[in-house]
Image (cartoon, rainbow, N blue to C red; front, side):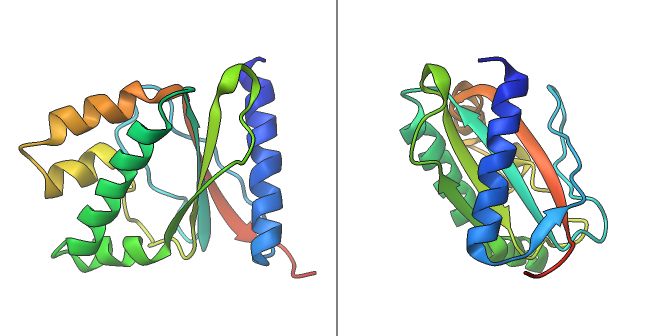
Length: 158
């Protein structure tokens, strides 16, 4: 399966997930997370967002443990913006793997904290500076095809 097909599959799953959540958010998609990108900021004014994470088969535990540490970092932060991120950031896993066993994780951020950076290595570095190198290597090593950042705007409520 090509990355384009995975992207389409991920977007379809994401749209279904949002519909199931009853959010009515289906437009305003913006792609990001190119290799080497060091920020994850949603489009200014976007009320909600998603991050689609493509994780290697056999790396679900590593990814989930790292994201658990991200949750700890956000919730315990002295920064009010970081604590707000913790409240609105929920992570879901597609029940069936994609081709070649790739696992799709969908982060739903509702509401998005305007202007907040969701770059995982930075969040980990702020909270766990002595552990960040190991956490970063675990996090990066879990990815099959990286991530896609989507800024979402409400279109209509069915």
